[in-house]
Length: 199
Image (cartoon, rainbow, N blue to C red; front, side, top):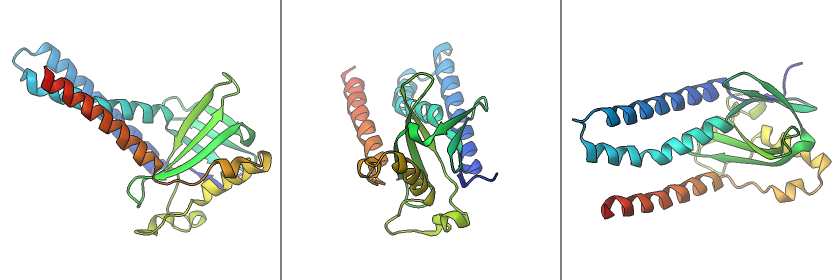
């Protein structure tokens, strides 16, 4: 049976691979810094510390990033690093949020659910298909208020059938992800600049 909605293979795997490449070069850069005595110590220590928040964000993003297929009765979650699959029932979902970064094609869906194996709250990030008839070619909607995607509406609707309070507790706030990331980077930047100029 064909899924109703699914992740974008292109965006999911291209971002996954590009983030892995960044992490690889960062680790290589740190290793080279530690073993090479002629390296410009102060400048490159500044760069190493300066890129730490990006490393943290990329690692968190990679851990949470999953490929999903949305079906009538459940969602199939596939891990990117080992292709392990999990069947997620709609009754397990606690929240569904949609954000976008540049108002064009970087749409992020964040799903939080109770893991029935560990009984802990788990968060996954999904990069959905955009250029598809099911989404009314969502990527073409530019420079105006962005509505929720059909995949987001569908998942919320299925959860709302089980939890009547779900929709009122999950209000659409497309810029929240960006605001949270900016606050984190701003705090880190202040701490970093204080440490750097102090020592």
